[in-house]
Length: 483
Ligand SMILES: Cc1ncc(COP(=O)(O)O)c(C=O)c1O
Image (cartoon, rainbow, N blue to C red; front, side, top):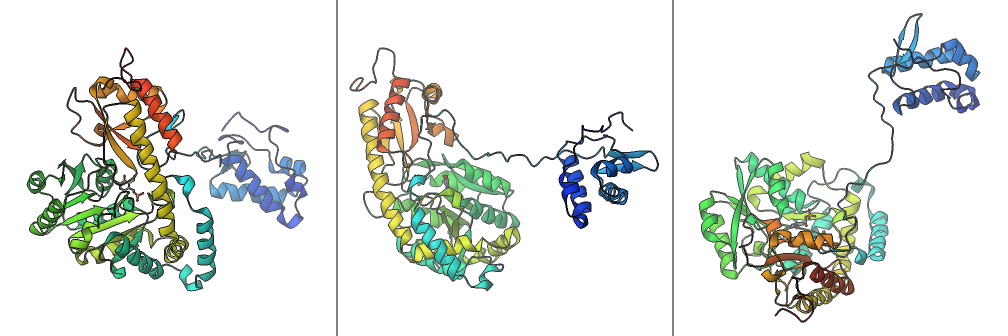
């Protein structure tokens, strides 16, 4: 038992108990008591007033208080000993509803954030999306609000198949298209099916997206990093690795920015056939190519060996969590069943909105608008680097939302470059952050600079601040110096 007692006035049951209509008082009292215990206002071990005292204090019948005590004792919130009293249960953990914390990635104190990965979220087509939402909600048959086909709404699969065929040159059979919550879920689904089929390892590009390895690890597969050469994944190490599945970003390698050569694309498919395996094609930013038409997806060359995946994360917004998978026949049934057991299908309203948005041409219009904004930003970045960090070589500029900028060694050792930039409020990532290879000593530092989410002015100011932060002693490296 305990010494702590609820004295008159130290515990205030809301006046609403007495004020409630007579027939509701019992429920109001039980809820108020339960809430006081859960929130910690009544601590474990606290002795409650007797039923007689509390009834008198609240102006209600004693039976009503007895009933509330018994109910909460049965639920475990209170404990009582016959004739001795009633206490707050010891095992009750205070669980105040409180405010939810926001753990979404953000960068406090950063003035300019060049980290790659996000499009300009302020370009999100709110008005067109709202119109698509209204149309979708109005047009969705009641039955469509039931559990959907685990592959996704037929309207969306049809619209996406047409879009991907036209824009990316894939062979898109809507029957083998699965709507999912982004490339992340696509890789998780495929990884889990490969694991069921006995695979234990999977190849990933090195340098590459750290998420590829992490997602496969969560599906029980070990990621084997495979090196790149200027044409794409190097064939020798791939052949020697023993993997039967490899994830690649052939349209615009992440993060190096190269497009796989035609010979390397053919070689990759030849390898997949020779090991009876699969190439997983992550077409994460294939829609953005600035100086000529996008290179068609690898999947179009051999739909039975390539698992194709993409999402709206770079084109619209990652927070929508909407993506797709195009599957070879050998994996389709198992992946669809895995999707079904994972979440019984993707949220239908989101799918209906995207279907309407794509079918009415909103997606194409939005991409055109973004493409012209991003091209201007890319040009601003290239110009700012040339002016403020002369000697910097920029590559991977033809497509995507980021470039590689190789800054000469005189601007400081790779190990401290990002640190100095960060101290000046400029967040950058180096190539070494995305791979195991690192940079040869004394050979400068390669930065992976995302630009799509920054205005041309922010880009210019950011590069100037970066140049000031890493300028070698004596001023070389400032505008016009050090070539
Ligand atoms: C290489 C790569 N693939 C895919 C994605 C997007 O994943 P998701 O479609 O799950 O948002 C990213 C996100 O930054 C990425 O860097």
